[in-house]
Image (cartoon, rainbow, N blue to C red; front, side):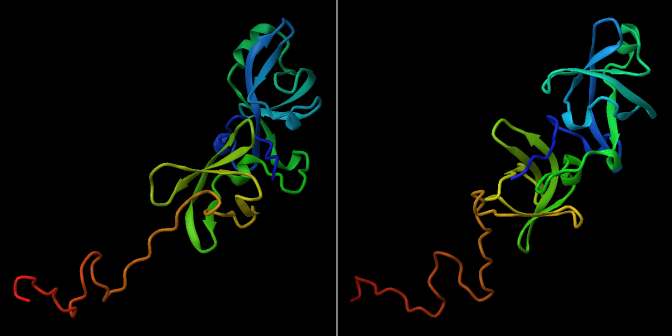
Length: 207
């Protein structure tokens, strides 16, 4: 259904609502200040892009490696020692500067925190977006607690994603989630008991 442009798992709080997590700085590569990027989002790591690191802006002046294991060099980082000092830092891109997405594509930050429901039945809130080999999964914290619900981002499971309304409509029947048992009517007898006005069984010893 979608390419949500996710990393392995992207905390929406990394840079606030106005920022997207492009990846994290990993180990140095070579002696010129280049670094590996972990949990990369390739569309946000092109050469010439401005990044925010520790509250300051920097620029990608070189991009190498592969999409799975990109290597970048920042304008302010010119030595292996400087690269090592940046290890583990978040690389943020302003949401307004991010490349446009295709239809049915979302950044994970847009989905995390959305309310999940099946029609009028409320289910919970998206906790994370998980990248799996076959598809991506919405990890949903259920309103009633218990084990999180995992919803694959495919058309059979997700009917509508409304980012503006912070709402995602899912098909619980497709997900194998049983509907809750209906509450008994106030005047209904307890299960396994005969109605109060039912005649007692005949006593075989007196018949």
